[in-house]
Length: 146
Image (tube, rainbow, N blue to C red; front, side, top):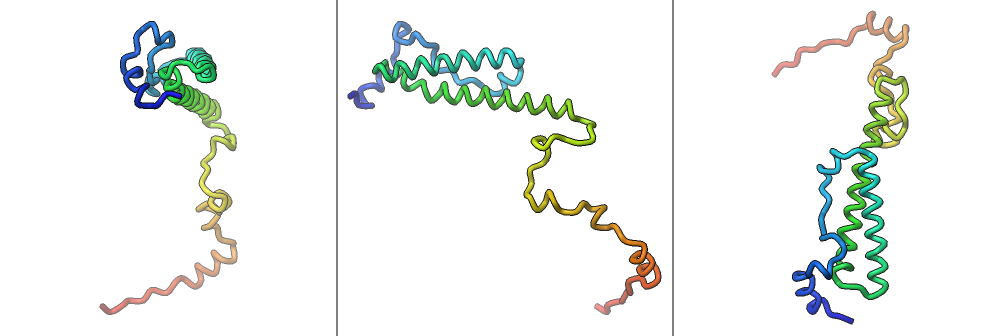
């Protein structure tokens, strides 16, 4: 067992020979948005492969620097998947634009009650009898003395 205090200098001064894996580089979401689907999937495969190698290093008591990379690699995978899913959804939105019905996963979530509530035109709809009654007996207007 190695205490965290002993591994700290090692993490700060890792040499190139010790880090056969690439340095801890955080993938930026804005950089990912410019990439195509194929590039994202290729990058995702590379990150997943690196994560599996880091897990093997963890099990085989590998260097502390490799074990410390696991978190950042997992976050990178999450970022790539997030951007990929956003691009997929944006493509679906463009494909269904102007269609009569929008797919359920692209509709507004809101709440169940709000989704089932009447629209404004439905709320304001009046029957023939109601319209006739309102025309015959309009709302009384009173002047209020201030």
